Image 1 (tube, rainbow, N blue to C red):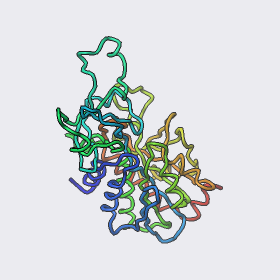
Image 2: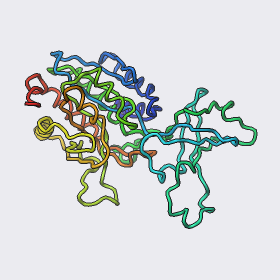
Image 3: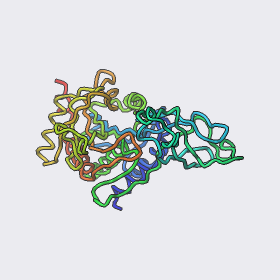
Image 4: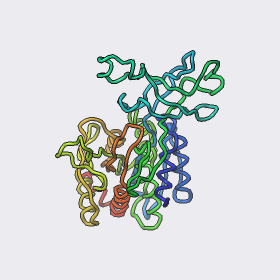
Length: 356
């Protein structure tokens, strides 16, 4: 594995449910050791400061550390774990999947179970199984006290078990939590590359917390950074699978997406055009993206104080908010290339012009 693959492996395999992101932050610190100053806000977002040739403008790069997962609700008398979803899940993609319950006594493997298909009537077969009817089997048998022996208790985080895998197409990566550890990895790589080049600003790379449950860390991190301009680095929805329509163009290997609209933010048009012009000049492939529902950390960051010119850059990813996603290495590399090229242009004059 090369450096980028090791970075993605460390970040995606870390346990980082919303509210439990410390392990992910530690991985980001590990890969940025010696490259940036480190601080935290009081909600848990980590901030890496990389000084350039000027203290301002202050450029914020944000990737959220939290992943969708579950939390222990209760343990039945027979030792089965009942749980609640944390973040946006669809029941169809949960059943039969392996998970890890993070407890005070260590990680407990399990599998999501429900009523066997052999016992479902016709009406039940047509419905999505509700979370209240699912459970996690941690291997308990008669006489097993799951709470006492395994340490499982309400409030413990649960995440999918899905190790980082380089696919037979060596440019394709399969892993859990690519939403948004891919963005966190891009933050790390951009800061590392900026260590080798001049930039007329100060860059703050941020791993935010609790994006999947309401963009919460974005709000507190923006208070710490007080940015003059912001880039939100996230995944976008790949549309190159068999059930996609012709008008949906995002595909793996097609380059980063420039989000022109989502449910939480309309991007600054001057910043958007600057990024487009830079991509075209540098011959970096890109495409446009729009999301009618949902949003990103940009929804909070762009409304910080008097407003922050902001833009979302995404990496097309298949099967997000599931147990495993698929990402193309070229999209990651081109996202990093584009960000570095744009940041090198963002002096005080250029940033002032974004809002005049």
